[in-house]
Length: 120
Length: 106
Image (cartoon, rainbow over all chains, first blue to last red; front, side, top):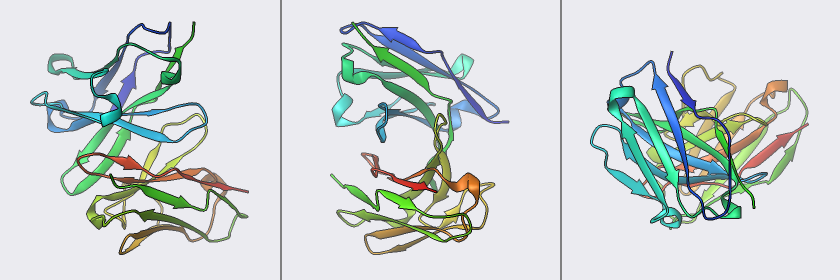
């Protein structure tokens, strides 16, 4: 079945970087866009950006431009999200989510989430 | 930037009751681009509705969505115990946007 499996929890110091992976299976990786969404503790969902898994083209939310980089490795059907210059308020669960494509303009499959804790 | 405002913030209901959740857009939003998600504690969101009114795969028919201008509604016809969760609306576009969420509690 279609699955997105994310890497494990991370604890980082302010100013450091973190890279989260999202390994996919059960579908043609290059046929779908991958989005990243984060959720701070007790808060709502915040869209970060997407990557075209085929071309590698990216689009970032304004809040994250310059600090977030989305990449992918098509040989292993895996997407990555890197955040640099981490701040305390980057503490959140980070999700990858597949855009369903076709006439379904939504995110139909989600990873289990990766908790990133930024603490000095 | 389009803002999605969900109301109420919290909806207190009992199993078997009907739930009506609202999502209002600050500007015109094409219905095609409006989706609803359910999120339970400790879990990832789950897609319920896309295109404002189309149920995602495996979603029970007690969930329905509708649109009227800039107002979008998610209705749960008869609440089941597993439906108590937080619900988010979401706009697909050049800059994706989520509403603030509505918590449906017992």
